[in-house]
Structures are given as structure tokens and as C-alpha cells.
Image (cartoon, rainbow, N blue to C red; front, side, top):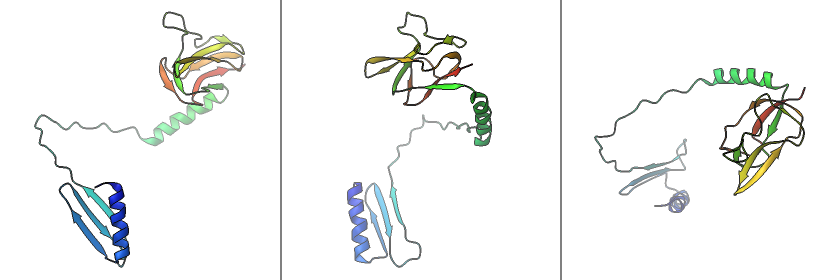
Length: 162
């Protein structure tokens, strides 16, 4: 049973005036409640037969860090980074710090750059696009790892303009 059939069934039940309809098939169990009851709800339950596999073991999942601690750290970094200019990606693609694997990187942390200097290359659809600096200054931080995907407007470098 696909979603269209389920939607048709819901419409049919709503028009019929029935308050509850239960449908059970081999692998699907659907209960539709409508109308006269105070809490109107529709629930879908799909039961998939599970095969017993003795080789599978349950692995405990590590809990993620709490959000407030992450927010405090992000705010502290943001206040330090406010004095810097962020160079962002103008396109979606793969970020490369070198023009080719056997060449040195375009720029390092601490390098002084001028307006128009090539900072990196972003590959998009087999085309390699040079990303040039729009500001002069000193590279403070490289925010993206080499050969990693980048999104449009994603920060790439922090530059100290002073």
C-alpha cells in the first residue's frame, strides 16, 4: 500500500462519517480515527517482520555534548573573529589549497596577501575556479580542510586587514 492509497482511504473514511477504521494487512496495520471523538488523530503503523540474527550486538551510543557549552564556545570564538574579514566561497564545489597535488599551497596561515591574489581553487563540475582575494591583509585562519566539499557562502579564510 503506497501513500496515495492511504490518502484516498483517509478521505473515504472522513466522508463516510465513521469514527474509527482499522485495517490490517500482512505487513501494514492502519488505524484512522475521525469525527465525533474529542481528539482527532490519524496513526500509521508499519510492521516489518524482523529476522533474528544472533551475530548482531547492540552498541551503546555516546551522548553528544550539551548545547549550552557549544554555544558559549562559539560566542567566544565569534567575538575574537569579529575584527577579521571572512573570505567566503562564491560557489559550491570541492576546496583545494594547491593548484595541483605536486605544487605548494597557495597561502598559509601568517601569509600576507594582496587584493587579487589566488587563495585557493574550487572544483565545480570538473572546472577548476581560482578564488581570488578581494582584500589585502594577513591570513589568520584557514577554515576548510584541503579536498573537502564547500557550500555557497561558506567561510574559507579569516584575514586580518590591519
